[in-house]
Length: 467
Image (tube, rainbow, N blue to C red):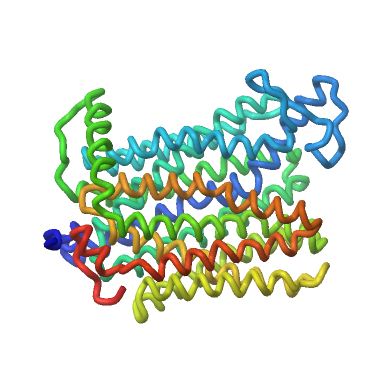
């Protein structure tokens, strides 16, 4: 069977000066949106919404424990009762269901209309606006918080799909690893600075004359303003890099998007190697997200570390990941993206193995493992993003990246379930953390079997010098 024709990437058609300007502006969206996952999702969102839900249970006359919102403290939604402490977990799951509907259609419309600048701005400002409105959530009205959070997280992921799809349009095949790594590093730096500012507000709330609730709500507004304000920088440079594939206007854009998506779904089986890489990515990225999300729990419940140590570790990882992402881009430029990702997965395996042996209450050992996590955290994801951009057919980038993000979100529950099940069965989180090695080893084996050059050619894309 003959190879498909190779089409030059849109990024190769821009002159170098214009391309560099667009690339610098593009990286600013990583900086802008990182305030949301670090400050809102990771730190303040879950704790605050759980507290508000617990207040609702108390107002209903329930006797809630002082610390544990999972025992004797139920709330009701849609006629169902569940523990207040489970609210955020259910919230993340339900938001994923909405994203399954929104993201593919958004990607199809972005590809068909090529109005990516407008769509990125729309989703980013919707997400930032909903985040700012979380400041209205207080007392017992956790249901308002649920709606606003779902809108915010959906806006975030939809904007990221559009943002990712611009990468191959402003970078040649040989530039994508470096650019993706730089953007990811910039995102960790921005997210770390935003989180540091918000933590300073929260910890210094007494000096500012703020209650604990008011301080958290100020942090929501700060994260939203950070996200919205810095989004203006990439929007100032973005333009249409490819001609639109349809001429629909108004509501007809939706039907055109459905047609576009239908055609892509019919043709996706023509790119089995792309799907093989995606399968490998979804396995090891689940391991990455699980380690990131359970590290604080491991340090708290298994190692008995102080909250101040855990907070400082979260901050430190953000800044170490900045260095790690840049380092991965440099290594990929010399040894190839696939080899660098495989090496990174082996490093993940080693770091987790070392985490098993951390002594209880030993802060320095925990910090050392956190440094190891930071070094591989940003780089693995950055190179996965750039490599996937090489494996998708031109003109369908946003649609494929919507599948990339949905798959990432849909499989993200497997790792925590394994972690929790092993911990419950053994009575210790040490074997639970080691069990996550399986994700990285399986991902390593699967990605080693993907012939990357052949996959790039099959997608009709030009090959970089080193892969």
